[in-house]
Image (tube, rainbow, N blue to C red; front, side, top):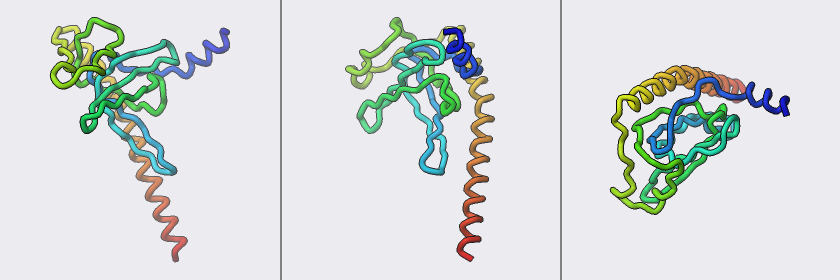
Length: 158
């Protein structure tokens, strides 16, 4: 059992954003399509956070063309580049599944305007900026790979 815990501790992310249920977040997620890599931003409301440790996940809900779409992200996944808090929410429940049944203005979550919440958002977004350096490095790596592939294809054609 200790062996499993030590392996899990090694794979845990050090810089994890401090977001909560009810917050509106932007999740920068790395998508791999064949040989190409890109970063997709998924913005929505955190409706639940499940489990703990390495297995911790969070569900983000957004409206896409009038249809509710939910996606589950692992907190410690290497594909989740960063999580930015756009708007802190004030909720009284740990799982806000009731938002699924609400439409329009009724589905809005009150914004948390306390100084404590603002400090939490500022600290989390500063951490996200630090993580964006890793994202920029990935983008540079992607550009270098595509340039190398283009050069190789030109050489094959000649």
